[in-house]
Amino acid sequence: MPRIEIYTTPVCPYCVRAKALFKKKGVTWTEIDVAADEAVRTAMIARAGGKRTVPQIFINDQHVGGCDDLYALDKTGGLDPLLGAAS
Image (cartoon, rainbow, N blue to C red; front, side):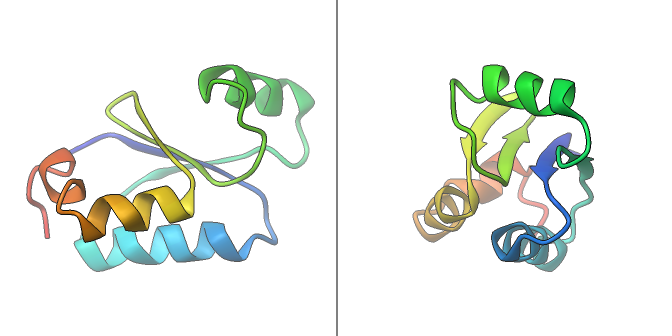
């Protein structure tokens, strides 16, 4: 099973879409809320190469990007190999 981490905020429609795709694929993830903790948000920004928006998604420590990046990766067939063909 891949290790998926999603940095989110509570009211984020793109976060909801990203999690919906992972749910459809049948995989689990760890959600990290950056809204209330500036240190966690700072760590996300550093880890994501300066990107400040949510979600920021990592699969097995590989930065995938945001929601649009995740859906684009799925559309081109690149997501399933990262997930271990879990879908």
